Length: 184
Image 1 (cartoon, rainbow, N blue to C red):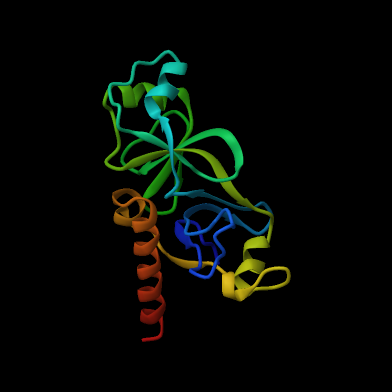
Image 2: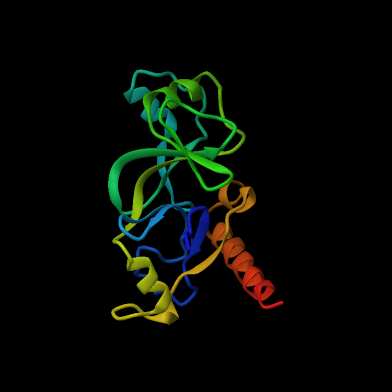
């Protein structure tokens, strides 16, 4: 069963020294042969999108948009996650409601205020080897079920309207609610 388009939510028992502590991750690839990829949604950096645009020779009119730390792997890659009504030259759909873009045109469009309804910019990704995520869910050695992931459906509110700790709390709540609903 593919988990593309789902949110992985760090278990409340995950130790504070773990990189994924209180993280919420959107899974955009989940393939038995290629592994899984996702973006940590709630780790904001101090890097402004305006700086990324400036480095590309593009004047960006806003000061308040920041880049998020998408994960500990490939930290120089830049990916924009957004709602499906918008696209750029290198856009792929991920799940039923969201897409990912990664090209220079997306910066030019943003600078011209051509934006999707919801979006965030990320540097880096979360990555799992083939079948690793399955082992983590099962708690198979060397993983533990007490630190396993929670999972829930993605929605605009959690993905784009909340930040940081509040985002994690909303995802934990939704995960618990969906788990209880599955029994009835």
